[in-house]
Image (cartoon, rainbow over all chains, first blue to last red; front, side):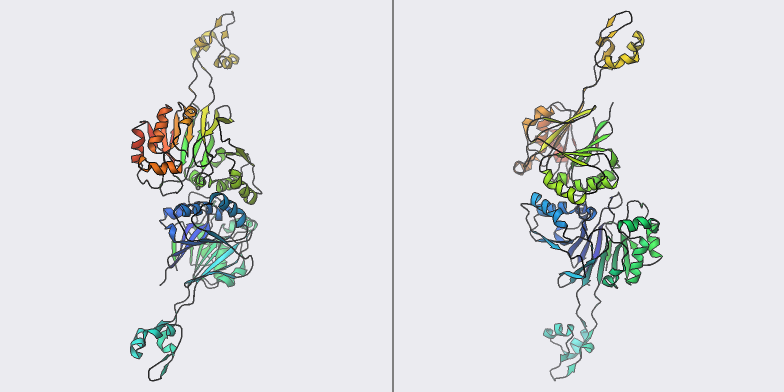
Length: 304
Length: 304
């Protein structure tokens, strides 16, 4: 199966701690790395975890709060020092121009590659990137400033052709792809063999959704329905429900409620407030609502 | 003795590695922390090393290359989240305005404290800060852009009054400070006791100099003459002498030559290129010229 995995580089919130770096993660689809958010120290985390910088394809910034973007200047500079030539696309809300343009103008006059900004829409579900393996879409989250969640979904896959049918009907190689795409096969004698006799259904399209930072918001449920893996922020526990509402964040229980409503296969919670030295109460709080929950942790890899 | 020590937070150069963070260090004078340079991850290093953020007094930026300033946005933000109210002064060259002003305007509209920029002069030896324990001065280094070194020097100290003389002449408490300042003592009978009978000379004024980044430049020698501790960059070894010259850096031998010419007591070398996995050759190269040399290292504390 095509590799499709998520590695956590940082799952802390605004104040970094000795336990947690600020937000960043890598989605590895078939060897290409898509970065989501880039808090301070992200390039150091990549080094520490042995991630090859050259595999970085593009960057998706959920929103323009410092703990999600302060690693960009260092990362962009280092990629230049390492001799990158491939254009780097950064998908982000419009406010990024105020942050990044002065930096690029001042520090990156002789950068070895081009940085291209693609601005996210504040409203609606929008396809923002696609290649032959994956589509990436954005949808609005409910936070204090313009914020987007991201859905990574494998593209529609081909049906599996049955080897014994190839032999039985002596199917020529040139027909294989058509059949995988759903075509029937016509034998030399003119016999039509229906596709469902020749093939089994395609593997399911795996999908991953990132929802951070966000308040509890049921309107995201249709966008993330049935995903294999949902990363949902759980900055606080229910005991901080007032602060949660005031700051536009979610509790662990609320993250689990969303996971349950969306019928996802697995939930990972992160973006933990620096006040929690022990995260088990957050995990227990989520598991009470949605059992297949795991805590994010720096370095941890979730395979889909 | 008043505490006067230097703690290394980062001593790598432009490309961070698993061994070294980018440039930053803390000069602790009597409990006040003066930060020199602030590369990415500096606040994370402070956390990791258990440094109390609230003790940070002010920040001195040698020059506006990314590996010396990319930690500022995160640090400034975190100090705000921690509720700092005391003004934070940042001493830096004029280019900092292009970097910091857009950031402050965008991210720090409601910061709990004021950030004050004090611009460094490109030329001459200039006193930039003083309190009752310390003076801090800047002087030009020779790099690709405007760069300053910093000299931290204890203020002139009081003479030590001899306890047995206090008893012998029955010196009243109100006279003690005058005598420590050099005054003679006149007894009740009118006898003049000369100061040098009552006191011993003051402790020497300890001093620390920071020179990074810089090419080999003998014109800095008068500014750092006889310091107790010199931090001088040694980005490369002599085998990279051409690259050293081209990039405006120094070799380990050159750092040691400066230490020797300036007759400093101890040399610490840092700002190591990411190419050196083993720093012993750099240390040996420096020691061949100036024996009392030590390697900088993240977390290491040098007491003066």
